[in-house]
Image (cartoon, rainbow, N blue to C red; front, side):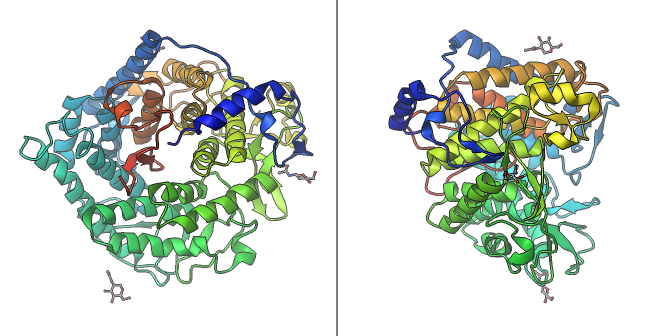
Length: 540
Ligand SMILES: *[C@@H]1O[C@H](CO)[C@@H](O)[C@H](O)[C@H]1NC(C)=O
Ligand SMILES: *[C@@H]1O[C@H](CO)[C@@H](O)[C@H](O)[C@H]1NC(C)=O
Ligand SMILES: CC(=O)N[C@H]1CO[C@H](CO)[C@@H](O)[C@@H]1O
């Protein structure tokens, strides 16, 4: 995204000498304004070009391996079930892995695979679906995946695929935009509730509006980037208008006494009939997460139109540092972000999903030139790294806790050493958030330490999740071997994990020239949607 301005980076390096070894800035358990001296010393780790090349190639190989398994046993279903060697349809059955996977194949410059994927996408019939549709998942995976591939292949990658006007793949790339319109047209009636907040789930052939239902804030607060991009590309404002109108209920809460327990930090469920919140619990984890993420990303996408979104993000970011930041008693050097039941009741537990926050703060910190956010973001990335570093498998769990009064007796020693304990779900579902954090940390600091962390994660995943025909979720990260191999290769493995890893190690190619990823001192031209699909910024 954006690099730290050169001057502040030099300043930071200079101030390293002043580093205080303690965590004085943590009053009690909470995060207060940190002095800049608390920044981290650069690790000084050097990676030579050949090892970077080797690593990028290993990630590419992982993609080919996963794609091969999918094509052999699961195409054209949504995802490969690599243990039972068949396909599953958990994402409406339009072939989610193809659409989620195409952008990464483009960045990896694998033209044969991309052509195969495009040929398939051009023929999807989005007007028909036997399965239940999730508005959120369909938007971030399908709409986001197609719009991003369109941006990439009609722009910097047009040459790679012979997709310029008059060339053989021109029409194929144009069909990405046509298919995006077709999909949005098939979904848009779901916004027709009393409030204008779309239904979370529906069936296409029923077309039944149920305004008595509820949606979650991530469910309708994570549509605005994709639907706005579609309007900007087509010149037809209806899509942007629908998504932005729904978003208004989150920018200004109708019943803040319930829906906004901390300034900018919201409850979870909202009624479709009047847009009011029905509960006060929430946080940056599941059900809320990407709503907060998109507030700053919309500002990156177009600072002119989305200044209010940025202000709203600042409210959330400030409240989080003030009320939710928390350090384990056994490891005061770590910081995690708590969840809440309401403004009075905070739970010291977190999730793999919420580990994207560090990266989101780093993006905000760089865009807004606010060093506090950069520092806080790096601390959060470090905290999530501790969940990987402490696990025997080398991969962090789905959920964890750090409340010293709730440590399970058999984990006392573990908690004292690592600062967290396994809290419930201990599986790994090929999720990207921790690696996404490493990506942003590397972008912001250029410190190879974060690349080493990313490589450690990849080696651990490759060791525990790899199967004969692809990669799979695993049942128990607390065991060195990762436990049982659960039978699912999620489509976001292609879209997110492999993409962030590749971007961390790949230094050359079109991707670097086009600044998808990071070029020191240059402004970015792209922003990632929450499924890691890069979208071209409005002004570029
Ligand atoms: C929305 O619902 C109203 C009635 O409640 C109906 O008249 C209108 O045609 C619907 N619009 C769409 C796009 O389905
Ligand atoms: C990934 O796993 C495969 C199969 O076990 C192995 O051949 C390869 O060397 C591994 N790659 C890395 C980088 O560990
Ligand atoms: C999230 C968290 O750790 N909050 C704590 C902030 O500090 C006060 C006062 O020490 C505690 O009561 C909170 O639990």
